[in-house]
Amino acid sequence: MRVLVGGGTGFVGGALTQLLRSQGHEVTHVSRHPGPDRISWDELSRSGLPPCDAVVNLAGENVLNPLRRWDDAFRRVVVASRVETTKTLAKAIAEAERPPRAWVLVTGVGYYRPSPTAEYTEESPGGDFDFFSRLVSAWEAAAKIPGDSTRQAVVRSGVVCHALETEGVRGVLNGVSPASSGTSNADFARELGSALGRPALLPLPGWAVRGVFGAERAVMLLEGQRVAPKRTLESGYCFVYPDLPSALQNIVS
Image (cartoon, rainbow, N blue to C red; front, side, top):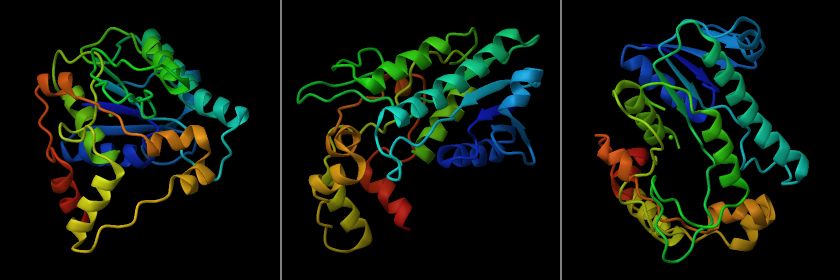
């Protein structure tokens, strides 16, 4: 397939590009900067969608950038960097003479405030919506374009590639492994220590995280979520590393 990827030069985008090309697909990036196999966002707006079979949008300002204060100005940047790029792609797709058959939107900062007993699935996310979930709703509304399929890096790029290549995949796919639900920071530190063959690392104090990222963003790092990839599994996707120990062993090796 010919795949157009918005934000393809970022962390997840690099992994997705490598995976797609290893599968024999052609990849073109939509980027702010010129370069080989790229078009700019301005060019996309002026000239419309280039010939392609699938479109993926990964564009967006890094929410956890510790160099940016979490204020109203940065919030607006976070929203605009995702919503405006999605609108640009959605408009180009809607106006294309031959629209792509697949359109995947990666909502990388979708976040639901956790509660002790709630479990979140693609069908029933639950929880109290906050700023991030309102942002997710905006992306999802912009992504409702007809197609055969509507994810950090290796796991999500695998799910995106699966959505592009599998006929009939629609809706929201959670990009978390089946055994990740309920994993605490202490569990993560213990498993990482085991993978490294060293004693478990001391957990980072909450006050330090809040001092670097601010109280609102720190919630994403300090409070867990119970997320279940029910629809992802039902669509036939097989996680290469279904649990934390196997994933960490692969990374450290």
